[in-house]
Image (cartoon, rainbow, N blue to C red; front, side, top):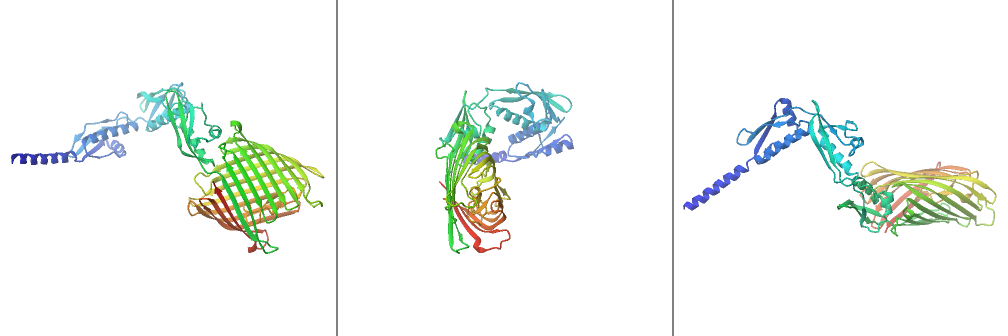
Length: 563
């Protein structure tokens, strides 16, 4: 019986003891005056705890936070017990110091290292606000680490009063062996052309190790059409080497693009078809090269074959080569063959400048002398600039901005004359994002030939889905033209959007002595499928002053399939 009573007593005493240990306690802290109390209260310190150990730790933390505000001499009084659950302490803030003079060695730092961090910098010291001292020291550490010193030690020593409101201290920096990139390893896509790291991103072995700069540059890999970065770069440090790891995957970059267009012939009232095929092979040889093959045939008995190849970083140099061949045949009237060869140099990751030569040869296929058609040969020296900004966060609209501007100077020789000529081209497009779903797309296309006289078989041909919609492919002939395309786009989801079509154009044909204004109206949609991007456009085209005719409408369907 006595044992049973003893057990019950122990259980009761244990439960009471546990309850006492788990009882919440409260902390009250005030200053020596009302202003001091306001400063302390502004820190919003914790006031409720489940034990005295945590209460004491909070009081120490509060004193440290006050030091960071400049009250480095603050002193907390003893903790007094008010009642069973409430404790109080008084903190004497004492003198507040606003700034600190940080003296440093010129062998470790220079005044430029304190740019944006200090209110006053000399070759001996930097004046820093104490309220941001911790942030300044962390930023200095980061800046020095990005100079190849990821393992440096930085300490502020010998802190003391300088005068009534300022402190002073010495910045001690222990530098380690400077780090450079000794090796670059690519994981995932092992055959990734490393010339793009060296030339496009300017990341190469032997360079000073700067992880912030490396990560910023590596983001541009996602702008490549044939590769994507799966995660940020990582670094392996050993005692005597630094190895940089990139994580890259190869993406589908080849594309097959085609469209089928149909409309009613105004003369025969019969349904007619036209279309084209466009094949793009990108990085098939793991070199970063591009091969474009385009064939177009339309209802006006016009055929176009265009082949273009681009080889970047030739022999691992910053220079690439761009070769182009274009063959155009107009029924049985004439053929024109254009060839060009350009060298291009990368100014920045998305900007290139081109310089090269082009030749044009056109032959009259009919025996009779046709007005405006003649055998001719032309040669031009060309200069071109390209700038492209990818839209990394959109599969529907992969290009956010594009600019192409080029000029050519040369001469044309025909059976009857030799004439100097100039050519120019200006193409630009931009997406203006209004919000996550709404955007406006604008595109300007312009080209021209400046000459004393012209032949029909050297003039520019435009019209169709790729410039002014609502007109047949390549039926508009000019020596000078400009086209403005505009679309209001509404994105229904990440894979589908609808848009309006409003196009305007102006062209001049000095051979026919005509100047015309053109307009195209309509609507369309884009749908991202597993096969690729399917586009549908319905547009009606008209000349200025011409009445609207439903029979002038064109339907354009295209599918850009990736593989």
